[in-house]
Amino acid sequence: MQEKSTRRSNKVRSEEMRARLITVSRRLFAQKGFAETGTPEIVKAAQVTRGALYHHFTDKTDLFRSVVLAEAKDVENEISLFSANSSSATDALRVGAKSYFKSMKKPGRVRLLLLDGPAVLGQAEMASIDAITGGKALREGLSALLTDKSVPLAALAEIISAAFDRAALAIANGADETPYFDAISLVLEGLAPVQERH
Image (cartoon, rainbow, N blue to C red):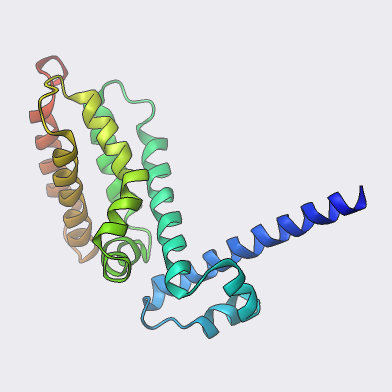
């Protein structure tokens, strides 16, 4: 019985250490960027050994990948939370757009997901992360909206996702969010079936 309890507590401690490394690294990567953040700084801030870091992650890039994935999941969760009770597919996508812009205002998030993420991990890896987080939710929303099933859903979702990201970059650089939200709303309105148009 004691052995089982010890194993469980070791597992819990290991999970807590991994989570702490991700949390501390997120803060440092968001503040300083991937290139300017070193593993000695990460282990010092997380109060762990280098061995502990390399027990959980193969290298700094592997740790960064986990940070980016966690960040993308947070964005997806925030969007889902706000759009869950929408009255129609169009409204869900519109609320999702507003939520995305709000979510991307979190300090460091644009750097992690739209600048350093693609630069460090590459477009293919970022597309894989997007495919299981926000991109998946966007495809599901568009699928619910579209009555014409001949529309190339994956390509449409990719184009709209790129528009969201460009808007988030502009907003992060000081642009007013309103015209971007209005433009996205017009696109979504144009895709909506006649009965869902406002």
